[in-house]
Length: 311
Image 1: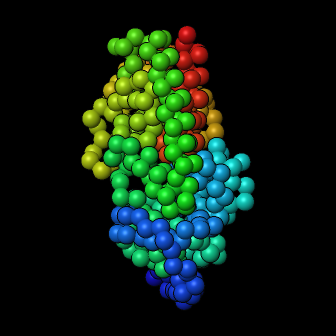
Image 2: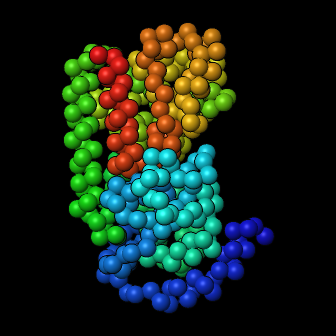
Image 3: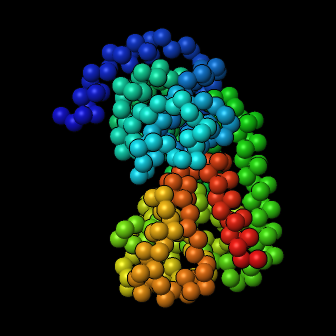
C-alpha cells in the first residue's frame, strides 16, 4: 500500500471532523470538478500550486501551508520573504495530507493538474479549488488569479496586481519596439538541464508574458499535445533554438555557471544567438515552474535589464 493511501485512510476521521465543523459559505465558484462553495471569510489558505502561492503573495495574503518548488526543499526564492511563516505541506509530486489537515484550512487552492482521486481526498479536508483551465490555454494564469481572488474575497487586489503587470509590460513593449527591429524579435525560452535544453511551450505563462513585451515567443513545433515542454534536444537538433534571442532558465542558483558549461559544447557555442551575445540566463523557478503577478514582475525585471544591456 502506498504512503499516500495509508495517510488517506488514517486521516479520514480527522478530515470528516473538520468538515463537520465547516461553516456554510456564501461564495460559490465553478471549478474543474464542479461548483464549490467557500466561506465568505477565508482566514486560512493552503496552496498546492505555485501559481496560487504567487497570487496570494501578490495581494499580501498570508498562506498557512504550501508545497516546495521544483528542484528545491522550500518555496521559490522570490516569494520566501513574503511568506515567512509558511509551513511546507509537500512537493509538486506528493502532498502530505496530515500536514494539510494540521493547518485547518478554510480553502485549498490547487492546480488544474490535480487528479480526481486527489480531489476527492482533499475536498474532505476543506473546499478545494481546481481551476478549469489547462496550462496550455492562453491566459490561463490570469483566469486562475481571478478565481483565487474570488474565493478569498480579494478580487480588487488581484485585479490591481494584474493591471500593474499589464501597465509595465506595455511600457517595456514600447522599449522593445524602439530598440529592436521588428524582424529581430523571435525568442525561445528553454529550461537547461544537465543533458541539454528543453523548449518551453510558447503558450505557457512565461511565453505569454514575453510575448506581451513585444517579443515573438517560439517553440519550434517540437512540443507534443498536452506537454509543457519538448524532449531534451540532441546536439544534432540544438540549432532549432538559434533565433534572435534565447532565455535560458536554470533551476540551480548560478545560471551563468550553467551557461559557461553549455558553451563548452561546440554545437552550442557556435550558435549565432550565442555569438551575438543574445543569450540571457534567468531563474528557472520563475521562468519555467510557476505563474502569477509577482513572477511576471520578476520576468519584466529581467527583460528590462536585457534591454539596458543592448541599448
